[in-house]
Image (cartoon, rainbow, N blue to C red; front, side):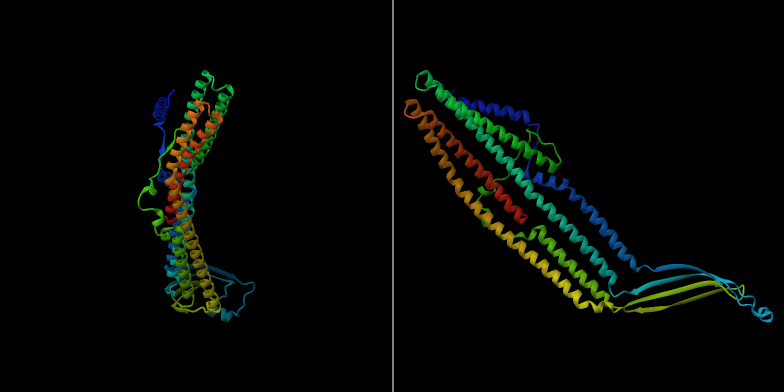
Length: 427
C-alpha cells in the first residue's frame, strides 16, 4: 500500500471521526477561564462581601440617629417614719415606696468625624476583601492554562503517534515484500511488529492522560468533558512581527496591585479614625421622669435638657504607638508590592528568554525534519538493496517521528509561554 493511499485513508478516517464528534463541545481558552471563574466557589464571596459592606455602612450611619432610652424604677422601704398625728395631717402619711419611669434622649451634634471615619473604614475593609478574592480567582488562570495546553500537547502527540503508525505500516509492507524476494526474514518482520506494539501502547497512554486532563478541566468549568471534546487552538501570537519579548512589563492591571492600593486606603481610613478619637464630641440631651411623691398621693413630673461636651483624652496615651503601627503596616504593604514587582519582572525576563529560545528552535525544526525524512528514504532504499538492516531503518523512522514531535511540542510550548506572559501582566 503506497503512502499516498495510506494518507488518503487517514484523511477519510479523521473526517469520519470529526463528523461523529461534531456534536461534541469545542472549548476555547477564554471560555474555559471565564467558566472556571464563574464556577469557582470563591465567586460567591463577592455577594457576601457586598452585603456585609451595605449593612456595616448602614449601621455606621445610624450613629447620627438619636439615642432613646426608657427606664422604669421602683423602691420599697422596710421601715417608714412614723410621723406625729399633727404632722401627718399637714403633709400626709409617708408612703412605703416610690415608683416611676424616666425617658432620656441624646442627639449627637458634632462627633469629630468619628462616624464618617468609621464608614470609610467599613468601605475600605470591604474593598480589601474583594481584592483578595480577585487575587485568588486570578490564580485559576494559570491552572486552566496548564490543563488546556497540556491537552493540546497530548493532541499533538496523538497526531504524531498516528503518523508514526503510518510509517511503521509502510515499513511492514516493505519488509513483507523483501521477505517474498528472500532479502528479509521473519525476525525483521517481528522487529517491526514489536515497534508497532510499543507505539500503540504510547497511544493508549496518551489517550488515558488526555481523559484525566479533561476530567480535571471539567471540574473547573462544571461540565462533563469526554473524548469527543475538542479544544480550539489559541491565536498564534508568536507568529506575528510583534513578539512578546518586545512588550513592556506592565503588571499594573494585576489584581495584586489593586490589593496593595486598597490596603493602603484602609490604612488611611484607620489613621482618620484615630484622628477622630482625639476630637471632642458635642451632644444635645433631654431627660424626663415621672414618679409618685413619698409624702403625698400626688405625682411628680420633671424634665431637664441641655448640651454636653465630652472630650476623652485616653487616645492621646497611645497616639504615638498607634501612628507608628500604621506606618509599620504601610511599610509592609510597600515591601509586598516591591517583592511582587521584582518577582513579576523576573518571570517576564524568564518568559522572554524561553520564547526567544523556542522561536529559534522552531526555525530549525523544519530543516531537521527534512533531513530526517531524507535519511529515512535513503535507509528504505538501502534495506531494499540489502545494505542496511531493518533495525537501522526503524531507528531512522523513529528519528523522523521524534523530529516531528519536537516541532509540535515547540509550537504548543511557544503558545503556552506567550499566554503565560499575557497572564503575568493581565493583558
